[in-house]
Picture (cartoon, rainbow, N blue to C red):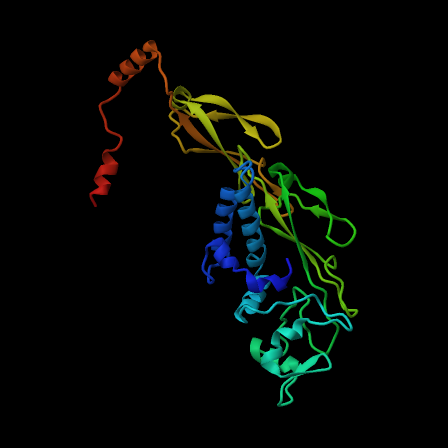
Length: 330
């Protein structure tokens, strides 16, 4: 997304967050919205799909600290003006036009103040020094000391859960240019950015090209959920299996099931760990965490009901909520 559109789009409002939200809280909030509006969760819902694209666009800007800083600086200038593409010789409009009414008259395509202050000095005063790095991620004005860096291009891609875990080489087709092969590393996470050096917009005056920043969206999985390098899965067991103990089969991502032993008296919520069956990245490998959920039968035969009632009479007369009620009294 080009920075000229940032004047008109309030990404904080799109995500429903405050401007001082932390990076960690922003990530959690975006993931919640992404799950809510993801096309897989709303098949055939055009409004949900449009909302998903909108929040993904907002997150792609605000989740990157450098891009977020630049966005905040641009928005601080106010609306009513827009950046255009980098200036070409003889072209009209451009970065300088944003400041035209503020900093003096036009002189041969440049603007200067009536006091002789250079355009670079005015930028320095606004952003805390002449060498502010303003526009460094999108090829903004860099002053007369060197050529202009090309703008960064941004793109998004959506991967299946398994593909994101294993990694894949995908092909991107820029609006103008040849297709680009991008190697998505194994273990890429939802919202992660991949920066491809020099694959952005060429410089208009012989400077370095911009980069391509690819934001990855990962589809949810019907069974597994990612937790860092670990994978989580809820595994139902019967009341009898949980009470008496059993050996059960647990699914793994993209592989054969594994057999796990459920100890007698296992309650709901207990986590069984399968080493090395989580996410593998250059930083390490995670585990598969199987959370036991005791399934309560919704229908009983008359014989089963009689047997259960006999079981209840044979059990000690105790209330498992006694301790909870006592603690609640303070």
